[in-house]
Each structure stands twice: as C-alpha cells, then as structure tokens.
Length: 140
Image (cartoon, rainbow, N blue to C red; front, side, top):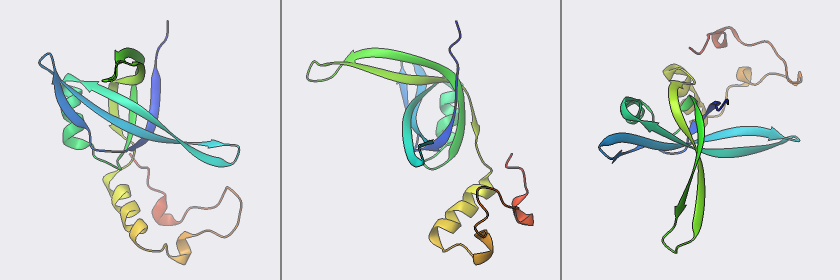
C-alpha cells in the first residue's frame, strides 16, 4: 500500500526538540494555504521528525520559514488529562528541505515592513503577467 505525503508550507512556530526513549524527536506545525471557491483557507499539519533529521530541524528551521516535507501519514490514539479518547494525525517526515532561499525570505520580511514599490505591483492583467528582471531567479 502507498502512504506518502508531500507538503509545502510555513512553520507556525520553532521546532521543539525532545527525547523519546533516548532518540531525538522534533515536532512542528506547517501552515498550508489552499483556495476553496475563491476564499483562502489554511490547514495546520503536525510534523514529526526523528533522529538526525530532528536535530537538523532544530538547527535550521524556525517560525515563518517555508519548508517542503516528504513523509508518511500516521495516526495515534491517546487519552487527555480528563480521560477523553483523542486521535492525532501527523506526518512522519522522511525528508525536509527549504521551500525558498534565504534571500527570498529576507526580501519578504522587508516587504512586510514597508509598502511595496509601485513597480512591484503589476497592472490588472489577470492572473498572468511578466515578471520583472530581478524576479527571474530560480528559488533553489
């Protein structure tokens, strides 16, 4: 049977590193945007990374970074403090990469703190328009 997930989104918080039976495990949540009949919605998916990948996550990922996660979907059952039965669905990461360059992240951070220049906003040409010369760089 096939169980593979490929997700791309932004971290909602810094990864949390802990130990499970002496093995490092990092957890974080990805916010993934999707369009639903013209309205934007966001899904929040819990990610679990084990062993060396867990260490990599805590060293290189932080809140707001776009990441691409490849892994498998797994559910687990547990009881909360009130004794209620709960089920969690998580993606157990096999591979994690950056979804954008550091320069792109820095440009985005600067643009959120200042109004975009008029040249950055294309005229109303529908969903397609010519990119400015400085935006033709491949982000990886």
